[in-house]
Structure formats: structure tokens, C-alpha cells
Image (cartoon, rainbow, N blue to C red; front, side, top):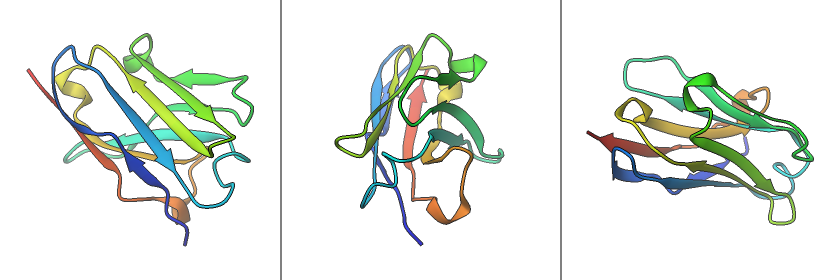
Length: 116
């Protein structure tokens, strides 16, 4: 099993910003469509955004549209999620994975907590 490694989470006040990163060994990220997912306590994991392999297509779920931006740097084999205007309801553990998700690639996630 190959784990993706998420980083960049933290505690931020409502209206603040964070930038999440996702790294992996080899070229797992650069050769696949990738997505960000999140899971709040007591809730099911949900997708947040996904990006095609060459970044030609990006889709964000409605609740984050205009606030979050998914991007990638294939040369660095890294995936990003820029999060602005954060809201308390964005509080969750955030994960990256292939799009569609592949169970063998789940990592530990990075916690994002937004205080009101």
C-alpha cells in the first residue's frame, strides 16, 4: 500500500486561509487525476475538488466553489488545495487520493479546524 502524505492543516479563524499540500513517492500524483476529500467528525467522507492529470479540468463542490482552488505541479509530483474565506463548517480532516478514489492510497490526512 502506498500512502499519500498530506500537510498544511492547522487552526485558523473564520475568514482565514490555508494551503494544503499532498506528496507521494514516485509519479503517482503526476500520472493520475487527483482529488481532495474531507471528513468531519461523525460524517461520511466527501469529495471537495478534483483535477485532471494535465489540469485542464477542475471541479469543486458547490459549498467551496469560489473559496477553494485545487492545483497541481506534476514536475514536483505534488497536489495543492488553496483554501480562502474558511468557515467553521470546513472543519474536517482533509485527504488527497486519486480521482476516483482508490482505497489503497488513503493517507493520514491533515486536520483543518476553523474557529468562529
